[in-house]
Length: 124
Image (cartoon, rainbow, N blue to C red; front, top):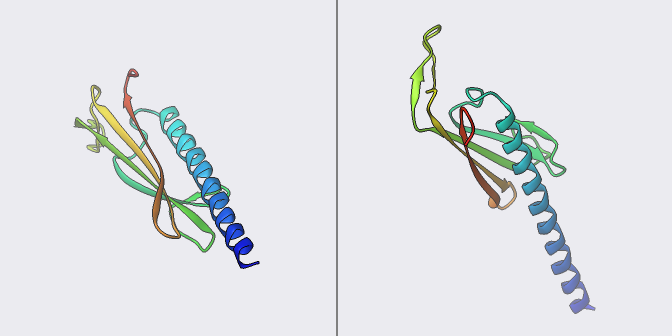
């Protein structure tokens, strides 16, 4: 009986990990596509952290009790310029923006998925 319970626990843990990896992939792809559809200057430079529940819902900047995944979005431009109208710093017109999305499971703090892409004003 103990052997059966042990096998069941291992099976359950494998199913949960597979489900987490599947959801992490979904969150990563959705985040990449959202960034690609925004304007070139739209995504903020630097690191942004979002929190999602186990079903991939929320996307909040604050962790809550139901948060299951932590998503780190890091955007780095190779060239920055200054907006002439308000003096804000923004990517230069000829910049190449490196976007990296990493999804972690909060419990255990381990990486589930990592994806990178590039953004260029006129496409890559």
